Image (cartoon, rainbow, N blue to C red; front, side):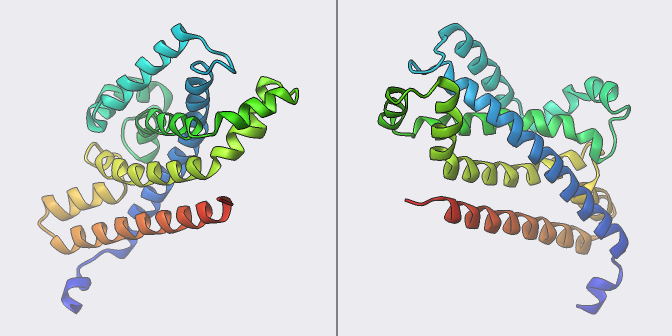
Length: 221
């Protein structure tokens, strides 16, 4: 066991872990905001009591389905020209952010839409009969009622993002995936691959535990 840990460069390990946490946190925050907007737009443009617009809903739904269907590693490659314009490089954790966000936001947006659909329409009709405007219905009724499912959805999305960051490492995105591939696989250092895997599992478990606790605290049913 001592030999297993002796050959590991721990400074490299903590740097890679920090890069993975950084990518997950920044992309997760952007995904939450963008996905919430996407989900609200999808729901509102398909709901009679709000801003039903079948044409706009069809376009939005089509675009969401396209980005959800593209495998992340291919999306990462397709976005290299855009990443070069935005970031100035296609290597490193920051360069992976555009692909991470575009890969996760449509997925989360669809989950938000499904969460909003679960809200009892009777509650919406009651709010409308009491004189609430459409925007008041959205932020005072829909979002509070669907909040447990929205938080549960971002938890699932964050876990998926951790997996995306590992794939981004194969294309020079840095992080634990990059370390496992270059230092572990290519240099036949299985101990590094094992450490990277364990650290990714720890990050996932922490995200899941925090998410479950938040849902339990929010859900008053």
